[in-house]
Amino acid sequence: MNFFKTLSSAVMAATVSLVAMSASAQTYPDRGITMVVPFAAGGPTDTVARLVAESMSKDLGQQIVVENVGGAGGTLGAGRVAAADPDGYTILLHHIGMATSATLYRKLAYDTLNAFEYVGLVTDVPMTILSRKDLEPTDLKGLIEYAKANKDTVTVANAGIGAASHLCGMLFMSAIETPLVTVPYKGTGPAMTDLLGGQVDIMCDQTTNTTKQIQGKTVKAFAVTSPNRLDVLPDVPTAVEAGLPGFEVGIWHGVYAPKGTPQEAVDRLSKSLQVALKDPNIAARFAELGTIPSPEADGTPAALKAKLESEIARWKPVIESAGQYAD
Ligand code: ASP
Image (cartoon, rainbow, N blue to C red; front, side, top):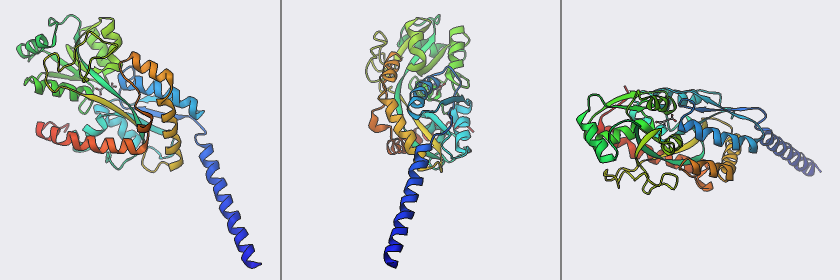
């Protein structure tokens, strides 16, 4: 009898804790979530984040509000999330800069590989090499000659050290063996405004910020950094075709949460990201901007963790041999 009593109270206790667990899993999220974008509003990371946030909000039944925390190539926004309460209500959408800044900044306020929980990958966006529309050259070879001849005055916009535009600009300058004057912004949203206004000459930026401008001919496009031309920009050659051998850059994006965020919340966010990656509206909007959502299987913590680890290892020697640091 005692045995049955003990057994039945153990079963009851287990049932109660299972019910509690599933209740907490079901109640998350019970309020709005802040998604930090570590670059200024109106830029490419912001555009991707707002589309994904809209779709995830529908799935989660709670609003994801995007907050732009730009500066220092994305490290300020990432630092904000690393230090946030790990309660599932503050998350981060960042790009390749999460990996490159781990080497570029020798004194980061957070430990890149240990400060976050991984939610999943979002998309891999090609870059475009652009100039203000009235810059003389008409093709990439002409742009390279022009940059070499005017290296002290040609300005290249970027979103700070560690940003994708910084990385692409750095690769461009090293490919043409000519250092140019760089102008940092808090994101390439505001940098684009200055490119349109003619205050800066050149920029390398994601297609999610540049496709509409290139199609509208408000900027001049010299190359895309993808292995193949893009359907939305059929007249823009690849950098390799246009004369820069091996010049290929893809800007992958991922969603993170602060370290210690409850597993149920991470799993729920990840599931919701996977729903977003299959959302036909996202696929259509991304296609207009020259990119595609990551496959559903990559919208997982394991895929993002593996990507971040491999990208830190990939860029470390490149950055170290360039010897350019942010401090
Ligand atoms: N495209 C930017 C970069 O260079 C970031 C942004 O503004 O979204 O990293």
